[in-house]
Length: 47
Image (cartoon, rainbow, N blue to C red; front, side, top):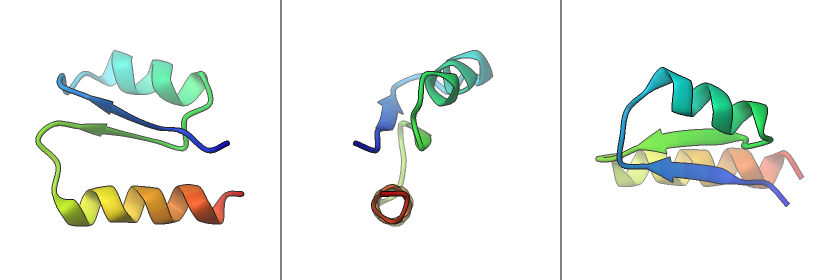
């Protein structure tokens, strides 16, 4: 199951940890609808 992490903090350590733990993407708030849709489409294509 592809995972897209969403966090309230823009922090490279959090992003690196999320990706190392298996996330296909990590979004920091605030993010646009387009960024969310792009991340979800990428996650779905990864399956």
